[in-house]
Length: 373
Image 1 (cartoon, rainbow, N blue to C red):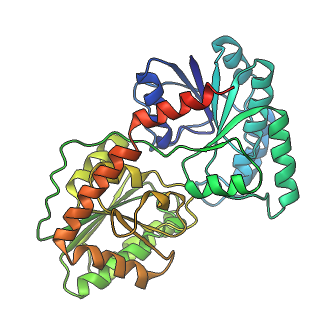
Image 2 (image 1 turned 90 degrees about the horizontal axis):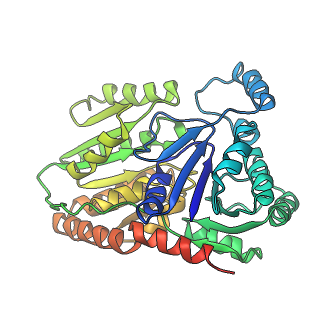
Image 3 (image 1 turned 180 degrees about the vertical axis):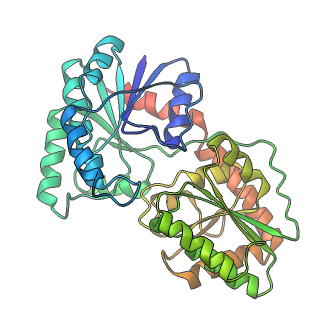
């Protein structure tokens, strides 16, 4: 069986899903429209194809007015591939297309071509929204169009997404969690200094400033903490505000900011820490939680993170109220004030990662879904 993964960009959360299928002996090829700095695709057959002339023209016009490096939602929606996409599908002849695109021109064009060549399409979706720009009517029209273009199944790594889609009458939706290989050499050691790690682009939505302020409050209470934050600069003004706060409060020896560290190096950092915290809000589906748990780290994330469903409250970590510094500070303190509890939750995280997020689970579920009549 041959799989073709199509996405606007090859997000790291796709890598081990692709690897799970490839390691099982299936053909795997990836097509993307652009590549980011933090992506990881070792030993994956990946091809970047050109945008259509129409998309290039519109995006070039928009880029004159864009103040940040991050693309706007409109730019992402109008990214449409040129003729290369049809050529790839025609020559590769995939049995299954895993489409990481939703409510955009890439999705529509892929579905139209896939229908012609009789490939089963799995729509990889991470949104719980059942409206388009506030319109339920437009959403229903979109779903009807997808149905006409023969989406075989929707696949989501978010439990709430599964429930929302089922509730609006979409029956061919399946919950298949993110996967990441377990680190078998976790020692679960807790030293005097509690080491906290956080990963995410430096942009306002990631809310690293909230975490920095929470750690600052705990340091003032006497806790010995070292916080290391890794990411790439997406908003230079926001990044500078983090540095300014750290310098103003003289936290340079306690809080470190790292930029543009390769993914293969960041992964190694998990084993050097005791706790993972992701403070971001409006977070569709953070993958770093799965990575952290596979290294035996208790995880804390906000209530606005789609993959908060991977955290069992008090067992593998905590979920705090988004943007609430008091609640975040309390959840961190609850973990680091009891080192034995921290070690127990660390062990629980490993067990959860092994049972729920191993690569075989993804492969088995996908093949089961594809083989349905």
